[in-house]
Image (cartoon, rainbow, N blue to C red; front, side, top):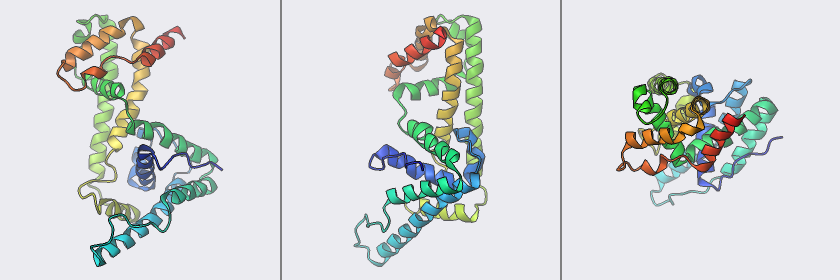
Length: 268
């Protein structure tokens, strides 16, 4: 049996579970699963386990809303009949029993890996994700002007073009999915989610996760392409591209651990 891997008293981890479990339950999520780093064998079993927990939560939410409608003076936060953590643990027990240990481990790794990491994205990661995206429409001569060999600059731009293309494509697919007819469960989930978040869709945030995952897949390619001796040249390009007045300017500098990992990759 796999223990529930998140601490729901932590705001970031609580968000990770709320959003991650919702995505796992949706029929609409299926087409995006691999884009955001989740490979599964028993997709329907995982989906049903997530739905069992969320169905209980939806019932609780509906009861609370009925109480608010009947008595507008009811407290904003009503006690839940079943604690969220207990629902989450039950979901994982059900998932282990029906989808199997391997898929449950994959879900746990996905939640505690890219989903949580994207929610806690560091400044340098966010910025270089953005810069790699922008590099996809920059001429290689711009990189070369800051000291990067032209052949290396051309390779970097090609990596960036793929990153930009993948990000744009999934954003378009997510936008298109939100206009499609919903399955029975997705309709329930959408109605519950949007009750106090009008205009916000359950798939909101999925594009950011996909961009995070795409960057993490491309960044090792960047490291293998660019010798560590040229890290500072890449930083100079980033600074010039942003300008000192940009509020993200301070994050252009590569943290020491990133530089060390880069150098280690070349030593290996």
